[in-house]
Image (cartoon, rainbow, N blue to C red):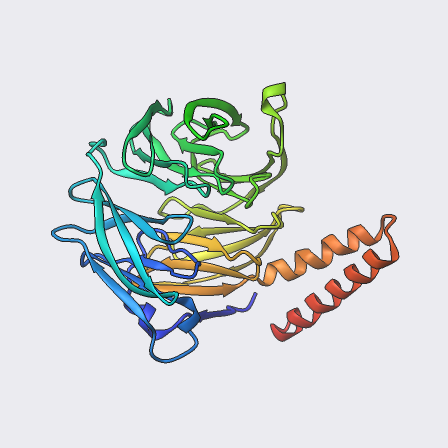
Length: 363
C-alpha cells in the first residue's frame, strides 16, 4: 500500500497533539508549553491562517473537548488535574478571542484517561486510570460518580450519539452505560446498558460509528472486534460480533478508529497505521513510520475519505485508500441482490468513482 499521506500545513508541524483534535469549524490542539491553539479550517488552504492562542497558566492540558455549539471548549490539566472551561468569542463568524470562564472542583487523584462532552450538550464525563468515572453538567456540578469495576481503566469515551459512556480496562469486557434524562431534560440516572464480550484479555481502546450502531474494540490478546450494537437492550437484546481480526501489537497500547460507514478499521501501533476491511477482517495495508514517535490520536473524517493522525508535534492526514476498496466490494455485494434500477445506477456510479480514485494511487 503506498504511503498516501500529506501534512495539513507547516504550522501544524509545531503543534503537540496529546489531546483530541477536532475536525470542526474550529479545530484545537493542545501543546506541552501550556497553550491551546484554535484555527478556522476554512483558512487552511492559504498561507496565513487565522488562529487564536490560549495560554494555560502554570499548567498544560492532556485532553480537550469542544462544546456541541462550538461556543466554548474545556480542557483537563495535568499538574492540577482539574477541568477548565473557556468561552470562545466570535465576530462575524470569525474567532476573536477565547477567555477562561470556569474551573471545576478537583475530583480525581489519578491520571485522567477519558474526557469529553456529549454531542447533545447535556453532560460531561471524566474518568481516571483507577475505576472512578464522573458525570457532570456543563456548569461543573457532579451528577453521578461511577465505578467502572475494571480494576484499572485504560480508556473511557462518550458515544457520538450522546447516549452512552464506555469504559475499557484490565477486564476483557467493555462496560457500556446509558446516561438517562427525563423528558424535561433533567438528569435521571446512569444505568448499565450492555457489555461487549469475547476478548481474552484487557481492552485498550474502543471506537464508534456516528450513530453508535457499530462499536469496535482492540485488546491485549492481539485481536480487534466489530460489534453490531443497534439493539434494544431494555428488551434483552445483546450486541453480537460481526467480525474479528488480528493485529501485531507494538511497544505501546494501540489506538483505533472506525470509519463512519463501519467498513474500515484503522489501528495505530507505535508509529504505524494499519487499515483493515471489517467485512473480511483482513489487513488491507499499513502506512509505516508516520512519525518518529508514538501516535496518540486517530480519527476518521465524517466522509470516511481521510484519517486524521496526531503525534510528534504534527497533525497529519492519511487518505483512506482502503475505504474505496471496501466501497467497491459492498456495492458489488448489493448488486448481486434485487435492487431498483435507480439503486443499480447509483451503485455502479459509486464503483466507477472508487475505481478512478484507486487508479490515482496506482491500485
